[in-house]
Image 1 (cartoon, rainbow, N blue to C red):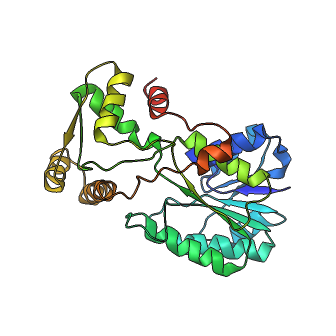
Image 2 (image 1 turned 30 degrees about the vertical axis):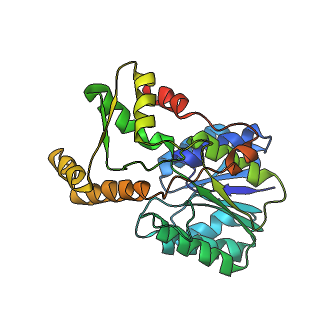
Length: 285
């Protein structure tokens, strides 16, 4: 078995490498691929093979994918340019004769209003049309996305958001990475679409209570209107693009875009998903 992991220098890809090795995949059978040469070179300490790739340069993809059996296509971070980049990767994998592509997508990518979903939906459609056997991992929100919130709340004692009563079924990157490693190393996943999420969905009040537990101080949830949230973020000095994204995402959460909790993730990894409090404690340490 030869497995290529794209985005291997990122948080999720790096954890996927760790879980593949823990599951007994020989380091020599893993190709860790990423864009930053220095970060890619640092992965050689794991014993894996490495490749510097650029989704915009098909020649680099062809070289990295040559002889591979399976590709873990970790979705790119270049929002707005990901569809073309993912298509290049899928084309290169098909040309190289890769037998299966495992793609990390977004929750309910084909039916949601989530602002991040359109590029994932387009990638899923292209992957299906490619004829290459596939597995789609629709990852819900990462609990680690709230790392900056921890520092802010520690100082203010207030968790402010315009999510209303919306819920988030987040899980840790560790859980998602472990699931990817399971799918990459076991049979029976061809054509499967997994809706991966934490076992429990939480709302703003729940999250404030969890923050109180982790930080050891009282934290209150302050529900904001979208307009008030926009004004607060602007006052904090955030650029308009970031303000629009944050408020738009909270609007998605308010209308249920991230609230569906499924047992797909816990079933794949064989244990309950990591509690939100545990992940936050790790981030706060």
